[in-house]
Length: 279
Figure 1: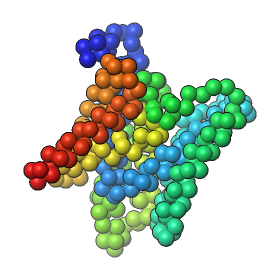
Figure 2 (figure 1 turned 120 degrees about the vertical axis):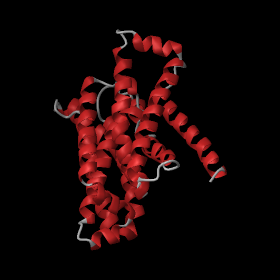
Figure 3 (figure 1 turned 135 degrees about the horizontal axis):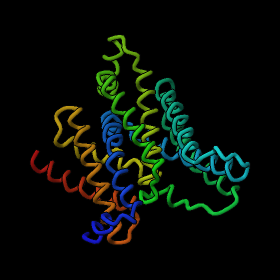
Figure 4 (figure 1 turned 45 degrees about the horizontal axis):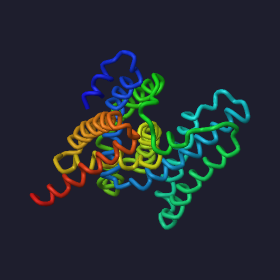
């Protein structure tokens, strides 16, 4: 672990410094949106959105390399696919509940399959592991700008519409009876979740995205009595897991994304047992 701190203090290891900054900034969006996702119990929807992101990434790479569209960046493709999937999933959840599981499962699988097919048809070699399992060490300055903008949007929207999101998460019928358009705010929440998922893919990857989005809020729920407290605790836990996982992965030459998830999952299981023992 001392080796990690020595490397972090070295000005030449800018990639490591960016990763630490990214972990802290990203935890803000993860903690807040993760709290809404956990309390609303829509983790499976977030999973479908995250896996459909791969289709957007594959399409963007195909358009960029094969077709020659330089503006078709994988990040742009990921955002497009995530937001589109969020809207599809949202409308299905609202208007076609009897087929919700089937459509979500189909979207989940087709998104991954389409991404692989696009990459198969794209000339060159692509490191799929970085998309599937993430690599926080590859963070760039542009990624930091993206996460800062997302944090500002998430924090601002959460403060401005806190009561409405609270109602959507805990009692949709009562909130609707008070004249609030719950369908709109539910779709709005899914779009924010989609944007956060795109950010999360850069850190822990598509396969592991649900874990970091739900584990910190799950731990926070053991100690928080109010929703805003749960958000604050989630942000702190997420930052702690990201930073610690990064340090462990660097010290032992492990993949950063899986290390972060195993660490957070292990802590959750231990605290779950302790919580149940003293409840």
